[in-house]
Image (cartoon, rainbow, N blue to C red):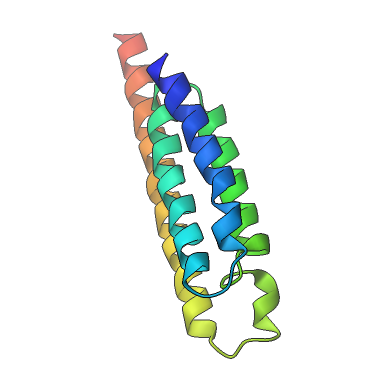
Length: 117
């Protein structure tokens, strides 16, 4: 029951990150980091077999970062000269995504080993 509540809270947090991400300036950074935090919470909630929470949070984070976020959306490559900032934020997102998918894979392998034993 706790994982279900935590998973839906992560999904809601990921959706709530859309609002500050749409603002200019520092609020878009806050929205970006809220999305990353929601991914960690979703990975924790999904570590016990219900991967739907993490997949929803990951999908909403992708939409948030690549389409909605004012500082990191893909359309900035044609307008903005500060590619270092945008690419570094994409790198941070990639690292967090790999870590979260690694946590899910680790828990899946441990569950499979427990089922064999």
